[in-house]
Image (cartoon, rainbow, N blue to C red; front, side, top):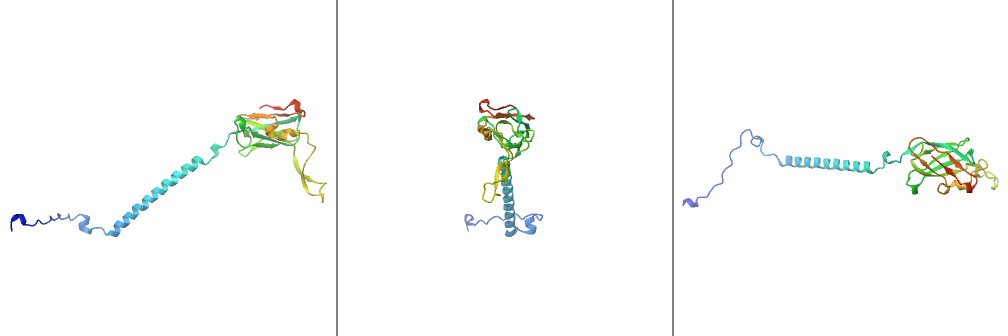
Length: 203
């Protein structure tokens, strides 16, 4: 046969060194490769879940409205008078004046027999720093409705004749506005019987 027609045989790979793992143990079974692949997928999924959890926690922390988002408040106390005399009972409420740039919860207090009050709000003792409308109302207690059929039906009645003019019962239209500042606030609330005299308060 001519030399050009002699078939060429594929070259054999050189023998593996005796220390090579494949020479000792042979090629790894297919099941081992499958287990290794599954392990990598499990680790990848775990990392992905942890990353998503971290991002979600960060988002919630940033949008959760925590304590740092609450409006600043300051202690407020004072004396409520009507025509220069202490109001001996009733309820006083400070309502943040939204039209003057103040927002937050209202603060309220019971007026003591000497006319003094100490405000409290949902966020703590005091009132939101800023401008407020003020209302002062007569005390309301449970009484006996003598005009009812059985004479014992409960009805809201004043504990005593109320001397506080009704116009002070609605904060926004009471005509009394005050400003709560940082630190201690001693705010007198001066009411008048005569509408012409007006009403004023100062912080």
